[in-house]
Image 1 (cartoon, helix red, strand yellow):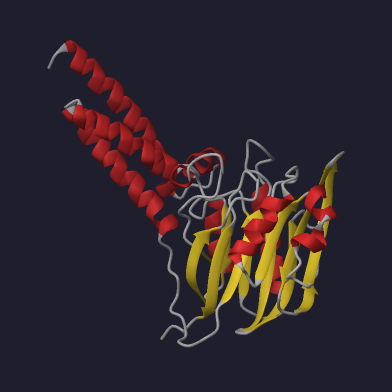
Image 2 (cartoon, rainbow, N blue to C red; image 1 turned 90 degrees about the vertical axis):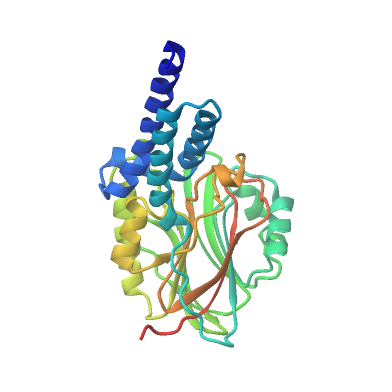
Length: 319
């Protein structure tokens, strides 16, 4: 092996081992904030690892290629649960409820793009977070086909007025109570063709180091308490969770609330990147008494997040 090839193997191998730490972090189950940050990015890091490994194979850097293969395997095992969670077994011949959920970005003024995206989705229920001043000023136009609505609002500073909205073609039986618990979430019990469903529109804070380290954890605890206080109906919780489903917050939601995520691929954020190269922080969780039929991305809204369109029906009870 020439000195140049040895140096190339060492450099590529070190890079690939660095990428492998993201997969190890995700598989470790450790909830430390540093580990959690690494666990968020297993999907795009897998893509990077595949690219580096292919280059190593082309250049016949065999030791680095072996490390690359092992790295790709670790990352694939780590990301697989994000992409392929259980969907449940649907009850045959039941109606389907379609849900559109989107972070519209508070400073987004492209109301026309939002309207096109909503019309194209043709959903029964809308869950919208970070609804800024521009769409709020034209809300009847934006939600023309959705007469049943409930909303919350918050002000973070001058010009930064964000709302969360649930809008439905079906009647809202009751608005689920808000609490002074630090959680930005709107909730409604909606009468659908498959029975009443509790729908939560959720926007968790950003993870540490972008916000305080216990923020997301305490907010999921608050969401858990709200769910327990709500009527005993099936649950859909959708919105911007600022976490992939297999990282710390996703695991907490699944363990404490018993909710199941929709598949996290293609990715939702950032919308400026190709969907195969991003991460899914815009989640849709369901209770086990609902079965997921489909999950896809909606048309662009002008936001840095892609919308998600999901379909649900009743699930068969486990035997």
